[in-house]
Length: 244
Length: 180
Image 1 (cartoon, each protein chain N blue to C red):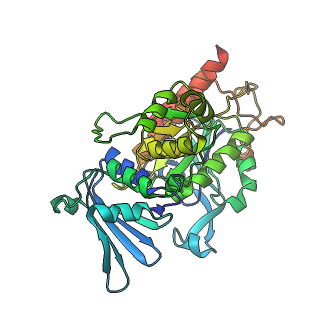
Image 2: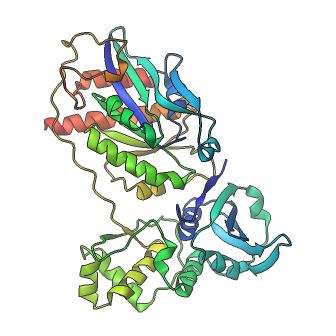
Image 3: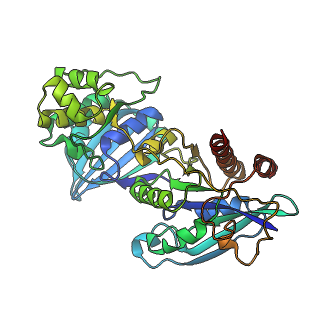
């Protein structure tokens, strides 16, 4: 078993965050066209990397530069496999993953491409990410990053942040992409609609259900909403499930 | 016997059939057919095209029915029928396949349109050390904090029980809220 996908499904910076949160140990393999990359992760830390090309496996970049080269890929297939043996490998990467992600973003023409499943617009609502208590961050922010970060919890949208800070829209979007990429802010998820009040289904007096019509089980008298069951019945179901 | 229903839904290959098999009192009724698309065949050889069906007998008069929806979107016409009158539903998601998150989000939005029933999200395959953490799954699916997102191993009975109990508690809490 392994974690599998493409960088369109999950960006490399997100993968690095997940490795830190785990913390995970294993080998991340990436394929982008003719280039192949490998990153070794030990207890959440990137310790070695290389990018090779062609059947001769010509090394195009290694160590920190290898990770940065992979951060510039817009798409690649990836597979991450758990492997405790990685803990025995020597460390060849000098910087932590947050620094590498920021460096990768700085070298990109369009940093938003690093997180293809997010769309940042002026109406985007942002919130501070909950940081894991074990997180030790060596990341250093620039002035614009600090200015935007200071507004995230009080401004209702990116438009309000631009108004409050005077930072241009292009710069603000770029900076938010950077902050998201290193895991400091995130887009507010859409709210789940509240359930409407439901009519009550009296289970004790309703006619017996037909075993032959299980798909419509629970629907009675044209009622299509979820049935309201009594607390006693729910407790009985919970007791039964616990006893399984 | 009075039927009560819980629906197990989720994207293709999320583990819905296994979830029901693990907890059902009866040998589950599955309507699996050979997969026709190449990319789907890489994930599994058979898929559920109509429904999976399992039961848990609560007492002599009551049965809890578990229905698994077909995961592929081309069979989504079944979802509405299956969700009619359900107490609540479980959204299963494969914690090792971030490529399925977008489809799971679409499915959650569709179910929210179909039914007001409470739901929980089960982040399956958490026994894989490479699996994405539950907090990340919650964030990527955009699930609000009042909806439980639970670690799940669909072939472990204890794990499936925890998911079902969490759903039942969530249903009870919502009912209580509506009565206040």
